[in-house]
Image (cartoon, rainbow, N blue to C red; front, top):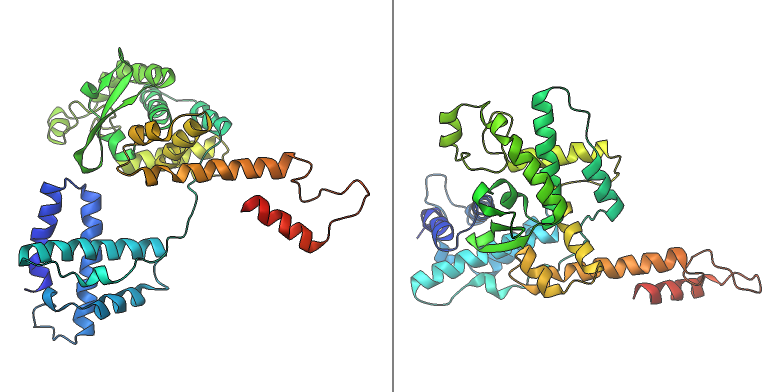
Length: 342
């Protein structure tokens, strides 16, 4: 059967049975449409012909597709595209009644380990404290809302989609926790710190003023009636708006790092680990399905230790000179650096 005729049913399966978000569904569709267009050109199909038959795909076709992506896409993106194709072909094989999946014959492109962007504790404090002096009632309302968002993202490690998707009933100030609907529609409970509780309470007291500024019919139809965070028109706040306000706040705080929602999530996890929290507990709070995803933060703390050693220990600094006053030769410096970084 042509690939494009199977795609709608596959995407519906991902949405209903696996509970994937619209963002993830769009990524699957985009990658698989790219595979379809590549195969149509590779197999020299005429414009009036139906698209490539999914049952004809061979490992050599998958390899050629990945080769075409090389140089255009990062290893992480190529891994994602191969993963999308594997998942799709697994689904096709299941409906066909066999286990033939040509994408399984190829190994994934090697992941290039890139440490996530993390704020230091003083930088996180500056981000929370930074704000323009509000001019007018509307600006004061939004400033209170923005502080609550910063405290929640940094204090509880929520994903931006989880943050904007929160309803008032998800907050429990008595137990100091928030109930979150995460990836795959999996629910989890995350603790709320005292600063987050205070900021959220302050915002919720003012929220009705902003809620009243928008059309009731519009707000209800957009599903914002119980939304914790509202935009200036009284509708549910979007993740794009959160990214924009965090970037602006980072500039006001004078931070030279890219401040975005996931940077606060990374900072939340890293600071917990630095403080001695158990990796399994961090996994639970972040809502990671696999512990290996959470383990990326152990690399961050190791890098932090190495950097502290290089900066502050007399034997770790590159400008260290021996007591005799002689400078270690270049090979010795290289060996020492390799040992520290190994």
